Amino acid sequence: MVVLGVDSWCVMILLWLLDFTIVTYADGTSFYSYGWESQLLETGFLSIWLCDLPGSTTTSSYSLPVLWLFRWLCARISIGAGLIKLRGGECWQNKTCLYYHFETQPIPR
Image (cartoon, rainbow, N blue to C red; front, side, top):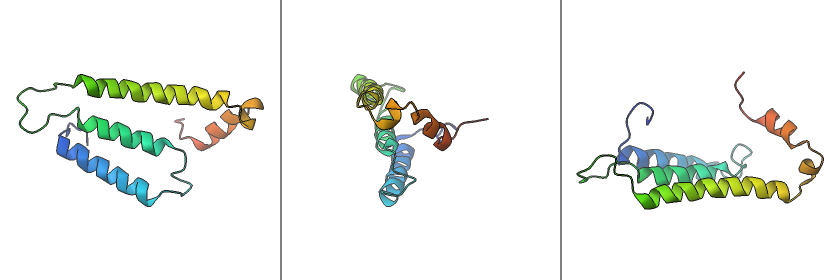
């Protein structure tokens, strides 16, 4: 919907609630067990605050704290990706983690 230009705060809240419902319902299944769901929910929640709120007189007035929260989210994802490798799981020591990654990720041909 956002790609099509429908980016009001109401639509963003509706999309976030839909995603939250799916994640809550599918919690614990093999489809939703990677940990990306919470990051997507956080990104969706932050994106609500990038839309023009009702009663706003300016357009595209991004809030500096929201932009910093997006930067903090990106930093946490990057640091977390590095720390998981430093933790020294068996697949990282054997250098076989990417085999599993490429078998399970939707990669275009």
